[in-house]
Length: 262
Ligand SMILES: [Fe+2]
Ligand SMILES: [Fe+2]
Image 1 (tube, rainbow, N blue to C red):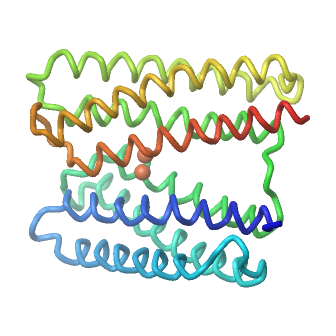
Image 2 (image 1 turned 90 degrees about the vertical axis):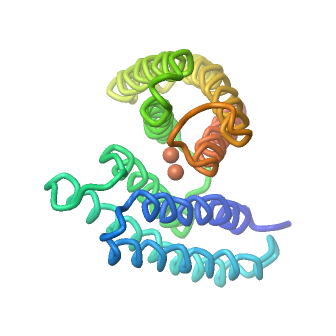
């Protein structure tokens, strides 16, 4: 049977390398024409993650654990490097040394995703596969905040004349902010809050909201691709946030399965 660490590592790298590559693309498109150095750096990251994707294609679920661990280390370095690039861009933006079309919250958001990816690789290389109850709450805090941010980005990048959609995005933003606070409350009630009934209700409640946000993103993506609505949203960004919602739903499913087994 295939080693679960190998299977999970390859799956994380497949999902997040594409995400990292797209972040670099979005940043590069948001810079202004005179920010050539920052654009060139972003393009180097696109090439770096493309090489990682090519390397990944040579692995299978039956690959040697030691080779996968070495690959995890290599990808970890890349994730750490793009994280520090994103933090550098955030610093330049917050000090008003550059002005671009990349919102500070978006830059912070994509740096959090890079840190998450790097930490997943580190965990996998220390043999951590199944999340513990406290990790379930933390992971939900992370992803709920990511979802809340997405709703805010969509709301701000839609044309203001798209009043109905802007309103819907605002409602999702509010809904997810509430869920984030709920998760933070549960987090501070640890370890007493780690009961099976509380955790399973928590997961279920999150799942319902994420599924409806996912559907909203799917609709937005289709409307943007067909050029039926006015926005500054790149079609790939719409698809990107849709895929991240799908990922969160898959993770909730994994947690539910591990709770049932516990
Ligand atoms: Fe992302
Ligand atoms: Fe995201």
